[in-house]
Image (cartoon, rainbow over all chains, first blue to last red; front, side, top):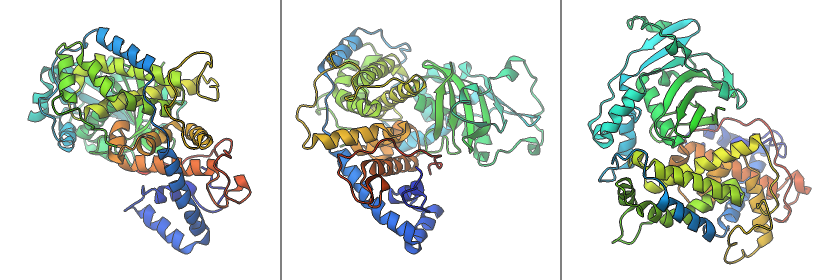
Length: 279
Length: 220
């Protein structure tokens, strides 16, 4: 949004303020000060608040519309005659657990279970391999059953690079594939000094393998395409914002998926910035 | 509204239906879909803005869920899982449509002669307003539209919408706020909006295209 209608006012920022997205943040304080002291911001605020409320009211007035009968019938038939699930392993828990506790648990027991994963971290000429970490968790292990072990075997490793590339929606599908793994690089000395690790501003949290595993887990959930076969993760940027760009394949295709720094945090989901199919 | 409108107490829960389906009950998944299909359809229709695209997205999504139900591990409500799959299918179709754009007919149908199911049972009090608001909604960027459809149209909570879309709650708030602000500008709800000469315009006076410009990063 340009905000040209209210000169000097950052309209998106003001909309965030009105919508409560800045509550408790420094930006929220800054906008509050501007609204209090700057006549342009005050006028825009006084106009935008009621206008946004009016839009909300108009949206709420949409009449509910049931699924068309022909589609409902077609689905009913299809679902009754479709093949049984491709993975007939009963992993549905007998009890529905607290959502928050499961979300916390997922951080340490990713469905992809990178317990056996070795991450290759190569950037700016340096190569750093992150040793695997135990992600064992009794609750999730019990819930996932044998599937976890199968998935662990399905994802032995993926390459992590730090190219610093500033991807856009047009270039995202060109995210790098894992060539280092296919060339069979030897594991370097794990005692290599951490100073050799290329740092990506804003993404330091995800340089921790457990955080990266939780991020992959969150992407798995967001993708809803089953197990991911991750090919690469590139610490980079997307439209100027710090981002990790994953390339992976799943049951629903091959994807390039850019996530923000909060990927995998409880409540943050995958923090998806952009995701596009790779063709 | 809540996503967890439950079945009658004597009926199996959603989780029990998923488990029965995984264990081979041929009717369980269809029963699960019957419970939630109207809300799934509403989300798909409002998100995609085209009845046929929405029907295809819902069908693809539910068949995908049917095939992969064994991988549902109960770390989210069944309805959240179903909504997530449907919304992702919708967003995927919208991205493909952006790559290969078509021009939908004004009512959102591709072919007026082809029956596409019943229209709303009762007309809205002000059909013109509904159409204008619907057009303004359809003009939003996909991410903002999906958030607004879930929160403002369907009445889901911010936390639930965040879970469905796989983003932080702050991101949902921001997408909804920016989407409402864009719609307010499009609809001429803003005092001083130059689109209507400085006065508050009638709701039926939809502006044309939404303003473009580089977007700030949404807060999380």
